[in-house]
Length: 69
Image (cartoon, rainbow, N blue to C red; front, side, top):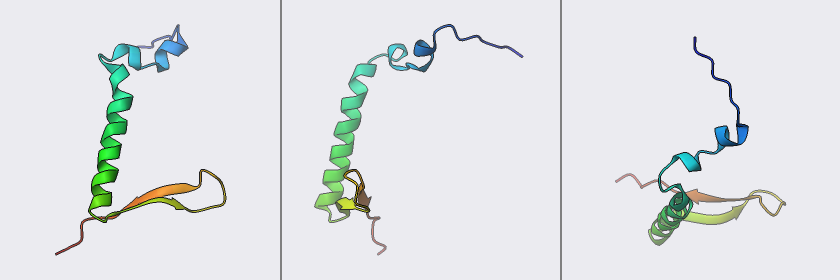
């Protein structure tokens, strides 16, 4: 069995520096999420910003499946 000792815990949990183009991923994910929400919203299959409690962050988006024919 091989054991590796971690010398730098910050580096051990920092994936970005080891991925080419990592700095672009957050915006790419945000754009894909917007397109998904917009597309389902236009199709009438999204209920956005619904509340489930009294806290300011107690909110969710509900995405409906494709109806059966």
